Length: 462
Ligand code: GDP
Ligand code: GDP
Image 1 (cartoon, rainbow, N blue to C red):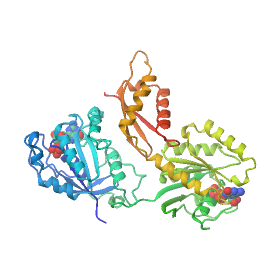
Image 2 (spheres, rainbow, N blue to C red):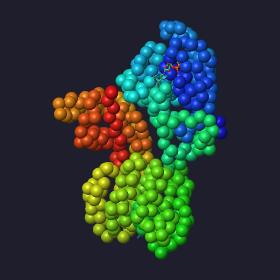
Image 3 (cartoon, helix red, strand yellow):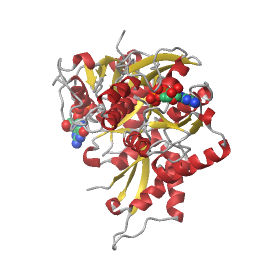
Image 4 (cartoon, rainbow, N blue to C red):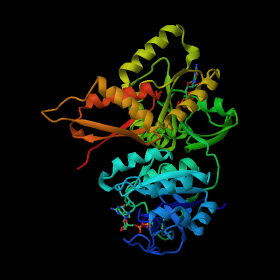
């Protein structure tokens, strides 16, 4: 498969070569403070976390003065843009958006290729205001990074993957902020080429207490009696992931039944089922928390739910063995009440009643899983976010805490999967938890994000 090729484009001195060096892990490019130092266009094999791609540095585009920029667009930059699959448009967030930046943004946009705006020089959270200005360029949410200090590399990797999905991209391996660049051969086998346009299967894990009905459900879903079920089964099997398609959509399902049975034999049920659950949760994008309708929300269920929330996965609650329930109305009301009371951190997560045994509710379960996945990937445009925030603050300004005036300036979504928002302002470390919860609940309701964990970061200048 051909590697995806990515061009770094921007006016001189924004830090293109610095990023290039970081990505290829070699001091290939010459970094110079003087704008307009003549350099050639360079290409290199880039590695960013578990991603591999070809990177093209267009720093060779030099201009003496911005006024004549348009006329002096170098052929090599145009060639790079024509050749690449994806453009990183870089600007200097500390300098803000200049006319030269606008020009380059326009060139990038006109190419019709996907563009990621990259706000450089935002180390230690300086320059975020400049990053914010860049929304006006119409290139979407800028990814704040510091090419020099290696900050923001995980977010950059994520933005790239969102545009060029990779086959088998390993999510468990978060890209560490500081060691985003691993030069040379190490870890080569984990790195995966970014293939163009390959849609990854949705990863689902079905987890729950022993006897909740996980194996039965998996069997029903994939329509094969591949896994043995039943309380008497004492067969040791390994953890299995199964590929199957549902309505033409690819799914990879993680099944933990084998480990559970092993655990039973070894009589270490409680302990093993937690680490078992953890593996499944880390594997998954969407977690189906399967409960037995007769005894939902028991201690072990809550522990597992907590794990799902901490790991930031999308969640669907499955009320299984619904075929055995006599008063369904009452059972549902009671389950909802327990859910509200015992799992406030997963508020709004879909609850699906089903029976793995009689194969009822399976389509509703899958529909809910795909919907939860969509929500988990949701990106709220910054303009909408700040319009909403303005209204909220007008009606409900943050309290003064021991004489300190807390000022919230703006907000942006820095990540998806799960949605992660950052608030910028002054004295934010004093912002009470209750106010943060108020904002999170407001975000959840206004932007329709039920049942996914929402993260909030507070960023004040030092
Ligand atoms: P290019 O002309 O776009 O290729 O920019 P260079 O990579 O040559 O960088 C221009 C200047 O910006 C150099 O002095 C770099 O050291 C500096 N620079 C690059 N990245 C960063 C960064 O993240 N933070 C800061 N403060 N300076 C940076
Ligand atoms: P696991 O331990 O979570 O994998 O649970 P199993 O799939 O092995 O199921 C445990 C027991 O519950 C078995 O006896 C199943 O037949 C039974 N069971 C599973 N799903 C259902 C269901 O939807 N309805 C009923 N009535 N029984 C079920």
